[in-house]
Image (tube, rainbow, N blue to C red; front, side, top):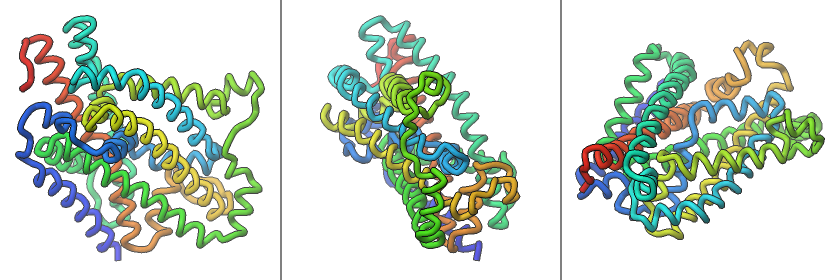
Length: 371
């Protein structure tokens, strides 16, 4: 029966590659290739922003954290994200949109000169290469464990090469349009998978399971301990989470080319603002869904520790349930969703680095303006 799951995963990889092929050759300019000539719907851009910031580690660690005692702390953090994105939408997006830029760092060039623009680009590309290397290898670890259960035993190198090859194909051929549309598909897949897991778990634990998890505090939404010591030491104290989340969102979504590029692909300033704010709402829903999975898993396993279940840690709980607790085909869909999380962050990084190389480095150091 595992063959059906494997077929689902293979069909998903083919569908993603075909998306890039269908969009190949339709770009008529650099602006069209890198920001879709500013003609993409705001909701697909919003989904792409969420998929870009979501890695495999997010998909497996948020349920694990909720199981281990973080409860719905990530939802508190996401509320801070919403606050930060509202500020970005009000203050920074108008500066980028009105300038007609294809890169976040072109604004630096217009205000402070090309050298600073080029320096920002080099810094972005260097840090993004390091970050994506870590994320890609980290993604290969759970994917290998999942595929082992399917009777396929690839090494880490094989997984990384296949994921990268498929991602490069659709990213290179389809440009930002392929990246954004596949991001929307990938987000729908892993979020839909989480909702399916919630439905299956709810049916299995029943009302008694919900009551037990509620009594144990696994559904605690807000940490309302406002003691100064707690606020300064706990990352999920409500004031800490909201302020920290807001500051982080203002930096990552207001100044990082990885995110700003997507917003520049919208049709208008109002659409760009809508996409940015909506992405914060979608992230909140996403964190709530993953946290709910973790809370229900706690009830499903009757509160036993990961070691007692023969697992290495709480991050193994959700992948283990995907493999052993879900029906055939649905299990394959969720594995495809985990692959999608890995490919979504990688494709966004590749396209944004290419955009910054052309728009910022070539323009800054070689005086070549992309046509």
